[in-house]
Amino acid sequence: GEVKGHYMNVTSATMEEMYERAEFAKQLGTVIIMIDLVIGYTAIQSMGIWARKNDMILHLHRAGNSTYSRQKNHGMNFRVICKWMRMAGVDHIHAGTVVGKLEGDPLMIRGFYNTLLLTHLDENLPQGIFFEQDWASLRKVTPVASGGIHCGQM
Image 1 (tube, rainbow, N blue to C red):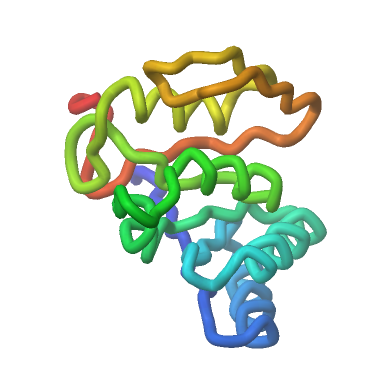
Image 2 (tube, rainbow, N blue to C red):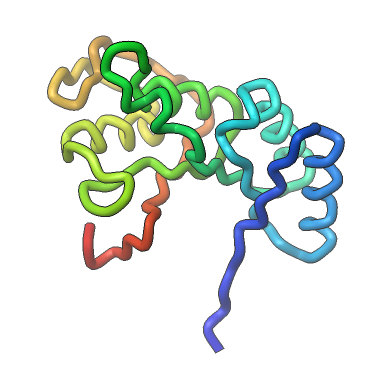
């Protein structure tokens, strides 16, 4: 008997439906709910507040991320999303790895992880951190490997 877990995806078209799904997940006894990035930043923050009030862990799935973070001419770097999600109250996020579906440059990935985990960032150009930043006591976000990655591949 190894205990398994499940991230119940409560993403929906309306906040009312997401709150209803999150309540249902809570009644089932789950401790983690999942939302997709595509619901928008206000909805993400609203779910972050709900999760805090209900003692739940909020996981963010990067669905739709590559439509704007991989576009070199008009996109934005995933590091910006990491910062926004930290401010919005997300607990877990698919942060990429150096192998697999969300693979990237090892230094760039390290920069994502540092943005999510450190309370103070120093300038580190190889990691894409262009200026010093103090996060003070703002909650950290746990970076999660995804796409079938296991610790032996890290």
